[in-house]
Image 1 (cartoon, rainbow, N blue to C red):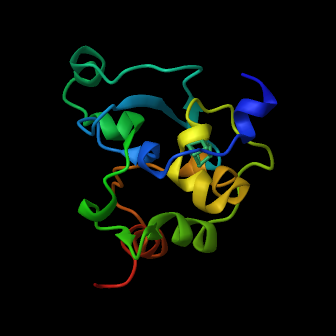
Image 2: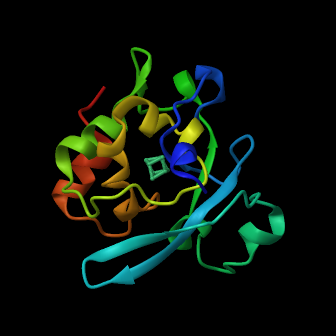
Length: 151
Ligand code: SF4
């Protein structure tokens, strides 16, 4: 993937994808596989477009797929609890509440159409690898970043 592909801005709001989607979202694809390192979970990004087919999603067996992988899918805008006043509030909380875990742009497959990148640019990408869609026993701070204020 070229640098231009890493930094290009999306051209159409309707094309934006959520980088922490459920596998049944429209146009879902595998964003990467979650690995554990000394600093916690880190996403190993898929090198290209890997559709979230039934076979891929079911391959994690009894383990929920969102514990093992991250998925990207069409941003659900107003149908999502995190979307208010025309923007994803989750990425704002991530940028404010989580420390960067890298100072480079990860080689992800969706930058041109990523909702988080469209809103927060590289600040989102520098924190993105530590995000896990399905949290198991998160600490209070991480839970607050995930949930945000009560509606
Ligand atoms: S936030 Fe950045 S690294 Fe994460 S999926 Fe979006 S463009 Fe890729």
